[in-house]
Image (cartoon, helix red, strand yellow):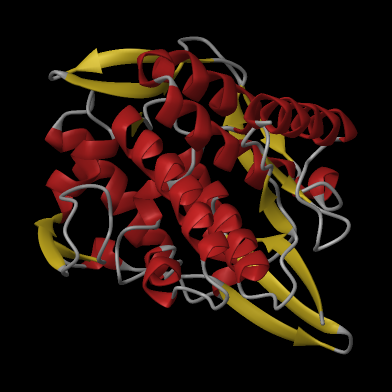
Length: 287
């Protein structure tokens, strides 16, 4: 079956800023757009045949596990290429959580590292992603979002305007640790999947997108995504559930790659050659 990704409802592209940096705010490291940087777009159609955003992110997890002291540089390199992940709309169970005083957060949300549902005041929740805004500014932002939702219109017309208020806002930040923990988890999850003949569903369930929508077409499915994280989640799960495994970890260098042959064990011919050389040397030493 054919799968296609589409941003939102009208093939708009995800927003990113030209340059990001890391700031410490209230003793927490944030990845933030640089001042005076302008917003641009990321068109996923450019990556349809390469899965680059997914591969680069899982390989980011590999680097973070091996060289945690270089986390700032590695994360910035990824974010400068693709933009922030969009955690703010990924964690709430309810898509329209701004209408209430509290937001219900799903399990495994990287805020409290809990495997249970949890509640948080909406203003406090937004403060996690807009840490330099005052409570009055956050309430004003929530009010603008709710005004859009009150309109008698289809969601496909409202959604892009809400996204613009959030993701094109230069004050929208994401915590470094959230990105780091998510990347490391995906890499470890892939390692675990490769150990088993069957899928470990407990691991897959943690890679959860609450708000994706799926449309059936005459030749397959269209998955509507609203953030970079949803794209990574859905793309990862599609590879994970395949009977033949094409998303692999190279046995020699540990790099994640998409194999053309499900029996492939190495990402490049050089890795295969080097692995064979090491095997020959070890065999000679034993003899």
